[in-house]
Length: 200
Image (cartoon, rainbow, N blue to C red):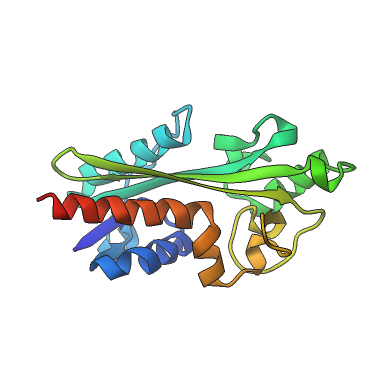
């Protein structure tokens, strides 16, 4: 079965595919299917609300089960910011380098114990019949003092998960899938998907 992911981010697609493939699901993007989804304005006040907006829009336009996700970084010293505004923290949407630079600048001078943070991911899968599955995952850690690693994307090069000495961008795929916010949310999504199938 094909499942559409409402994103142009190929790295997100690969993460989703790795975890959902054992269920016999094939993850496709709008590009794979040769059409363009409408841009969805993220007007929600929570990660869950924004994930649902993307999933509902993608499902309605494609007729396929559609996964929408919203994720971000919540930093204790910044009162939970950047939160749902993580992708546009520095002003330009998706400028990872600028976002990370602004974060490190705001935390400059703070010691390790004051740099606590967590990644949060909410994933909604909307089905053509109007039903949906919602899953949330979190990964606790802290912000490092300088970027390190070339893997991952977003704030991965400055986020060090609890129990690790390295940033998220330095972890292997297997390590990242096991502890990341998105990996945990996707694992829960897969579990709920299995429960949905067995209930039919």
